[in-house]
Image (cartoon, one colour):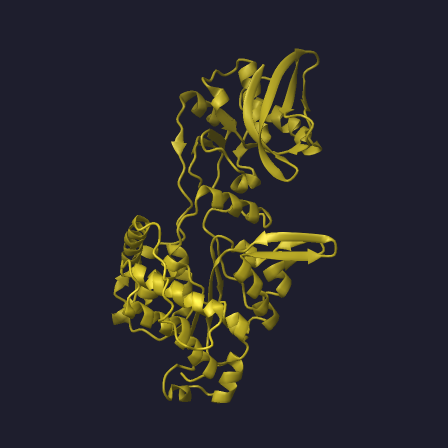
Length: 464
């Protein structure tokens, strides 16, 4: 009898399971026991066709008995097909492998012997101490594997033990060659280091959307625990997760699609951005109900969806970036009498801005007013920003435990909410980290006051 390791879905959770296979005298056939569902039992026809297509023989006077252990629990998985085939080829001595019990086999078969990665491969919680052999896949996990498009090629690779290491999650774009101004570079460094929620405001054509999109390229890779959670969330959307999620919903996206819901509760765009970046471009063009629905998940890092008797809770811990023009025509520019550039009245512009409620504004750590940049000002490459960010993070890690601000005397004597005070302190600490300073200096405090407090006051008063 041969025993192999594989993975199956048990009560909507993925578990490591064991395939036990033996050959018994009798009419040739394949019987699967141990809680296999109808989908798994139907795979017997594909398994037989794949074995013959790969040049191996089906038993003539023996029955193949497969037990999916532990028994007693209902199981389903198309990825078990590969494990069953390899177990049969070993038991019938058509192939010979050393230490096969240390491997994890998971792959889906075609009738012609072709191999492909099951659709659920992106969120299966693999045991990284083992080696996974599967079909072709575009997902990038740091596990050793042999990838082949056909069962025959895979077997040859197994025998030769030509295992290779897959790449980590794929890079989003070639951002290293992008060019930014010094001000934009400072903004990207600050946001990437501190993961601050930000409202990028300004006139059209100032690069707000480009800056928000570029931020996704500087997000850190998640650790394995976080990545497992991301994969489980993305299972709701039937999406193979190959990159850190950067979600950019259109401003016409309805409330239910953003927060989740339905007759059978399902996750929304907010949860799809969990662990990554949520960009809401043209923020003030979103329905006010959608904007205000962000308040709780941004605060609690989770969102609870209730529909009748069904209640689901989804994670919603994301880096939040919103961009907006300051008036309906998008020509309003902050500063002095520059509002004259806009064909709308200042009153019209102010009413546009008032779509932002005070409680929603309080969820932003900082507000940045974006200005236009000339081509000559774009002098810093994305690669330089990434290198500096890596250097700062290494310094920050060496300073553990972190030095926090205990003295609140520098905070302005205004009627600030607790969130605003907290934002001021976090922003000042990030600014100190950018300068690799263990202490929060006066310069850091002054800039924090501007970004996390005064800019909000200017926006509220429309005195910009």
